[in-house]
Image 1 (cartoon, rainbow, N blue to C red):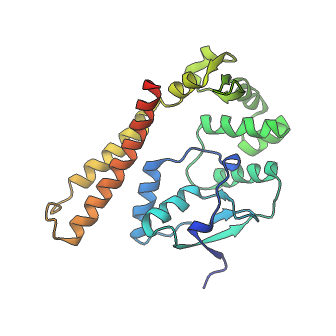
Image 2 (cartoon, one colour):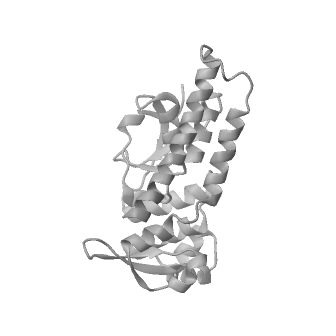
Length: 235
């Protein structure tokens, strides 16, 4: 059939150490719809322990479209170390798919710096100048967790005034969720386009049921984000 290996979605492992971006619920919903309409997606990429290195959006979209037991094609990495796997994840993401934004790049940059990857190597991976790597590496804040453990986290350009300050975990979470305008805008637009489709009120019609399911998925994504905001504001 295919030159790619096949694996059931529920057998794929996730390791936060290998994440290079937050999941975008709008993209997952968008990809899921495209899959059900017949569009083909590249295989996901796993390491030898079945941990996902590249293609998390594809994985979640396939799970939403077909369920956790759906068999999905994958390719396998030849790397085993965390440093090599992270660098591979970045390089593959730059080559295809939704590009990493600057904040995502700063996040994975901190992980790679902690693994002693040189500035010149990082610049080569991200296709930027050495000066950009130095600038991103300095755009950090020191976060005190509930266990009093301090971690270094990236900052967005709009928060330069916080650079190298020490703040609480709650303060950082409030900052981290404040820039939600673009994802929310796209999700709302998607919901509106679903509602505007003709002949969706007939609940006996299978097409209507499908449209309502899509609407539910979009609203579910929105409520997840709003719950996060509410939790931060009330905690």
